[in-house]
Amino acid sequence: MKPFALSLMLFGMALAPLPASAQDFVFPPGFQMKEIATDGTTLHVRIGGKGPAVLMLHGYGETGDMWAPLARDLMRDHTVIVPDLRGMGLSARPASGYDKKTQGADMAGLLDALKIGQVDLITHDIGNMVGYAFAAQNRDRVKRFVLMDAPLPGVGPWEEILKNPLLWHFRFGGPDIERLVAGRERIYLDRFWNEFSATPARFSEASREHYASLYAQPGAMHAGFSQFAAFDQDAIDDKAFLAQGKLTMPVLAIGGEKSFGPMMATVMRYAATDVTEGVIPDAGHWLMEEQPKATIAMVSAFVRGGK
Image (cartoon, rainbow, N blue to C red; front, side):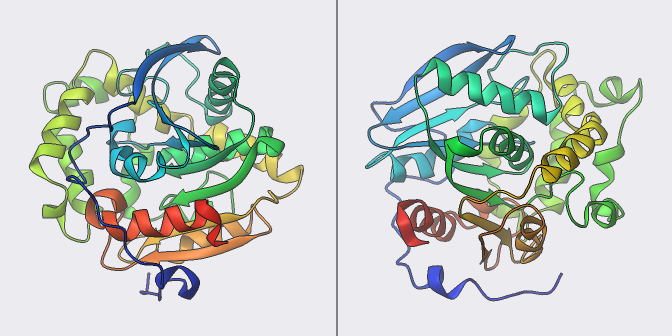
């Protein structure tokens, strides 16, 4: 994909300084860690701040820990809610329910348990897919929606995207995959962190060790593979959501310049009526690791009313 300029409206926003390392995984003082039962599973959730609620969903190869720097910024005037997705991180690993429609219901149940109605929604990677399923099923609960650098099954150019050889892992399945990767989780995950980065060194060694240890926990890789195995069902479900009409809340679709770039906005224009394009320069897929200041500036400006 060819590089495109950053959305002019957002590019002019000052890049907010980060008071701590963008990859320290430490949520600010005042955040609570809770285990919340929802929809037949239990989610590990970080909650902090005060004000309008924002829900942030991570993707594969990471956990909710990826959002610590953005949470630090937004907690100044928002209630920030950061779960680990079903089966990932420190959340429970049920045998089923890895289709994104079910995980969208996880998010609705989580918010119900917290007695929170509307949210701004910020998502990355597989979190995009869960977020879209949640938003499509709960259109009155999402005020703004930020999606970062990953497609939606069944939406727009999905079939063409599947042909990209870099996405081999979407179809990596079968009875032996867990046995092949067992004890080699770091080797497997390094391939994602390296191949999907503009500059692999920006995904720090500390980050790699942190996430590899979480994905090496019993059942964690099985749950991760289950996220991808559900894509065919997700495509069916997303097409059904599209048949009900496009999303109407403001959407910011962000791509890394060296990854999805403006394609992220192209995808979302099939699914939403009010889409702003954003491109983070000199970044691959791992926006929060590769260009944290620019990513935080763009997202926070949109959430705080830049649109």
